[in-house]
Length: 73
Picture 1 (cartoon, rainbow, N blue to C red):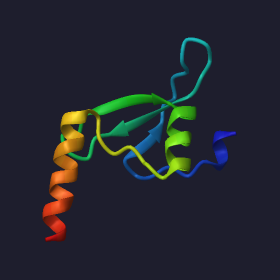
Picture 2: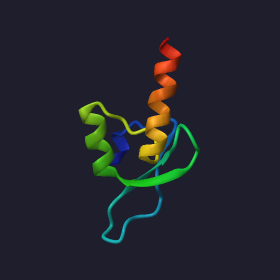
Picture 3: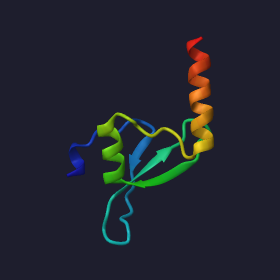
């Protein structure tokens, strides 16, 4: 099922399974470099909606959006 999933460079499939056998992805934050673990179905749903997660927290998300706005100016 996850073999057909193409992940961006900052995201990789976690080799460890969850407590009930679920798969996870490890996301590297674009701002601070911290790695966070999310369930694969959650990540796929975010991709489907067009909102690919790029940050680890709300604080880093604000900084990411601020930098993007400044780059456009």
